[in-house]
Length: 306
Image (cartoon, rainbow, N blue to C red; front, side, top):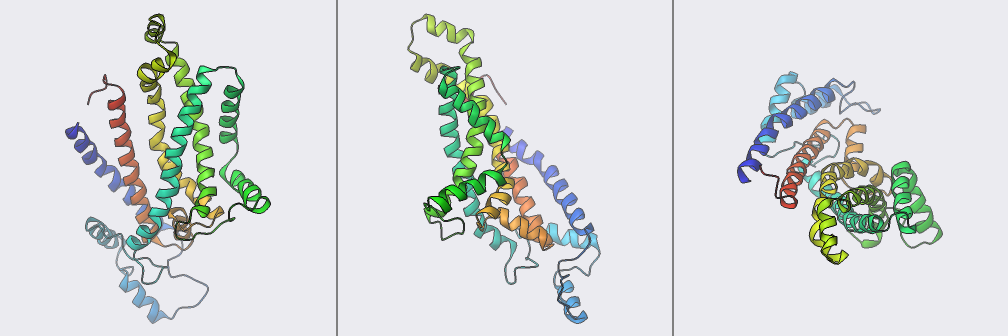
């Protein structure tokens, strides 16, 4: 298992290099520069700024400078946030996004798996229809529609929570954005878990367990839960990645200073190093989550060997 994990990590290096190279070229081929603005900057100041960030060098030299810094764990200096490095910006925003995105996935897993099991055990009942309705709404309604609805109900009408902003991890600022992501993830997990559990409950080994007179609770927890969880586990990797991309909208709706807001600000300001640093971070997270999903598969199904 350890050899397999090590080989997987080594195999991701070419992918990571390819992603960095393509993104680097695309960002530098985009018209405009990081110091272009409506306010005129003198030629001397502009030349000094370009020399400081190696922008006066050929593109291939700039690329090698960036790779060298990256190998030393340095994501570079931000062009727009004065006196801030990309490492500092990421370290400040990452805990916020990790709390909201990661916390929402954990809560959604617990609720979604539970609802999926109940819906599968009570097919065509009211709770089954409720889970299916929730799944359809979660897929049909986009984030930028559900978010303002939550703000309208819970912040403006009921005044239970603030409409937006951030105050040093105060829980009242976390509830609404986390609830939005939990709803979207529960919709997906509940539908998948319901379908998977129905399929497992119709398997021969479950019929055998029933014929032996085992209680349904024992059948679910000891025999049906593990194989039914496999499709749900495969969702965790893409769900973790989508929580970062969805954060661009979520954090804009609720004015949260997380990674999503950094990405949108970096793209709008042509802050090359900031956008590249976040792309590297997202790629590494993708690789790690895919590896964790593969390892979870082996734990849930002993027939899977690496």
